[in-house]
Length: 431
Image (cartoon, rainbow, N blue to C red):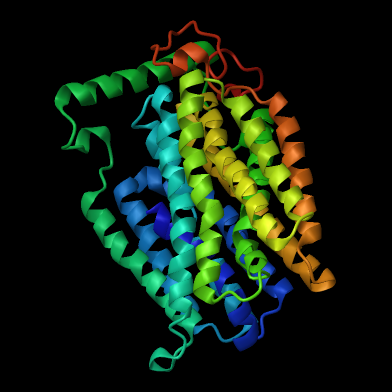
């Protein structure tokens, strides 16, 4: 699901030049339209996640997937900048809630000790999509003229249609709860439920049993810090995602398909880095050092890309993609271990929706800078600064795993490790 989701979200990066030529969309308008998706995502994500709790993952994730596929397909008929804006906004409305719903889904299926690897494997979907999207979108763009339609129209139509069809498959196979999983034995279900319930009991015993308010989450400093960190990750990640095809296109003499192949290289490197880092952070239980290292590596890569030739810049962007892509799954293990399960769904949705506004800021800023200067150099330097500031901010984070807990020890009610002990001002204390 995440592969299809990511392809439909970012494939406009490959159609940027064609949309500019055929529809008259400028670089600034392209960046603004690309970012509008995230504004809609932020506005509708928390309500969507609350509805997922009511209707269940199977029905709600199927609804999300089919509606986003229909909107993505409609992108094939864009005829103006205004229509481009409307469809990008509607795509954000349709997709809202998908990512936090899956993260919450993991929290109800897996103990803490396994969530790092599970989240990394899930987020490898976006890396896999980035690897696939380049060659696939490049090949579809070369269908230019088939049956009288442009290549970018074929790309949007076929990639959106794939999501609609996959949504029907999801409805057939996705299980709502552990109890519904026919592929688990009775003892396996009982063991998983016992481990998850014990972790929640430890949180409750350590933090108290006061009523939790979902409406005062923004008063919790840690939640605000999580929002800022994910905002920084999103700024960097989506700037690289949306503008990488344009940067690679600066290498002279490449066809659309060759550009797509080269765009896949940084994400192929990132894919391996995400999995290795996820396993390593689970094994050591030390989340924050991995997050700091990933952010600094991404910052170094974007800075180097401004100083060297296009070919060497591609190598530098491999480092940037590895760093920023890796930072996302490592980051998400920290809120999962910090948050009380009673507010996990809306809190995760809040962090994701506000943090994802970085996906609006970065392409918009890149587009304005490119129109003004004719180059992406200023934008890449800005990404380096954001990455370094985020790395410094990690020092303020509570949570992030406990070495013994992450190695599989069942938590005890008296534990006072990160994410376990009393947290002054934490969301579970909000009345």
